[in-house]
Length: 264
Image 1 (tube, rainbow, N blue to C red):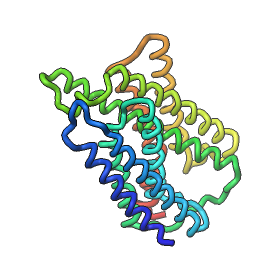
Image 2: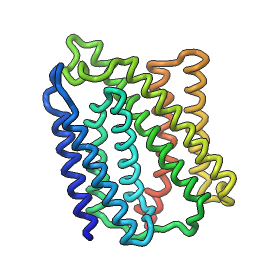
Image 3: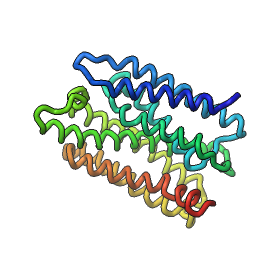
Image 4: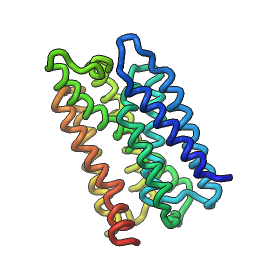
């Protein structure tokens, strides 16, 4: 079975969904067609991932493979959120990034990088880490869109796309829901790491642990500030983006340096 065929079909479906979302947005526009294409694309990407794992005898934890996996999880989480909230227009920003990750993975095949340990403790740590990063990725996207939405609402009249987006209250509510869920999984990832990974503070792991803890403190502090002092707006946006940048350094900073600069 040619796994790449599923990836190519997924790229085409994501592209179709993006085009449908990018059409001039009317007040009564229905985005259900684009969402169906996005679900189809996510299903195809899932099949591609499963077939690739089966062909290689395990998941390849290289940089581009992990980036593609994260993009898939972020997409699925967004589509699930769209079932109850009018947030499907976020796909206009997310789906092109997923297309890019899949295209890079197909264009630049990387050497196999398997984990030496496949016990349930390590699987728990990895899975919770990826889910946490994916949830907080959506939160960061929400924060960027809140900045754009705030700026556009001050103009008269705001652009049609901004008018079609959910209200600021809805966007902000989803932002904190994603952050709350992300902190739960990040706590599991850090806790399992401290308990089950013996060399978590080893030289090659120190920066990951350090930046992850800092990110956890920032996101947890933001949730506390929201609960205790009602933080929102620019304060929430700054804290969210700061925490996500730290996670980005923790999750992908070392892999980028080791695999592309040092070629290890």
